[in-house]
Image 1 (cartoon, rainbow, N blue to C red):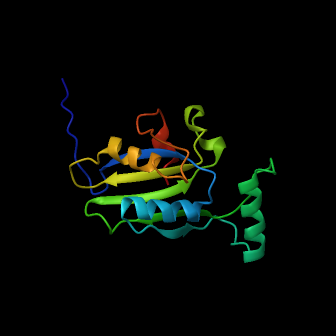
Image 2: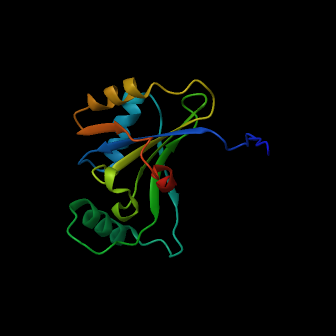
Image 3: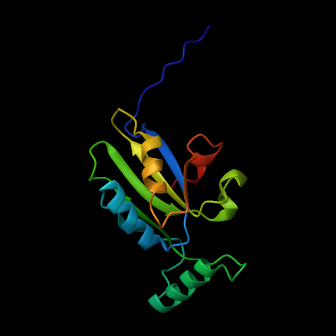
Length: 155
């Protein structure tokens, strides 16, 4: 009989995902989350293989994505907001995933709040979701950490 040993690596931590349904733009939602959670998420970028579009083209593409007028995918850099310093032992990231990449059960959510718990104890997700649902900018916030394959969309 073989014995399995789990070695806890430097990047081995718990991750929790909260799906957020909102009609607001990502920067406005980020501002609201910063106020509610007393954190300081800032914009970060991961550039795609293509060169970055100019500001005017980027604005057009953002409007197309926001208004959902175009059925063709718009190529642009992946943007997300993150904070790793406000709460000790926690990292927060807010991002938008393309609907084609999402499991069917979570396609109703436009935004995803990722919480990485580096140090114990785990966050109180019930209280956190209740706080988010009280906001007028958020239509619905749900803990979707246990949805199958949800970890595959994490940047």
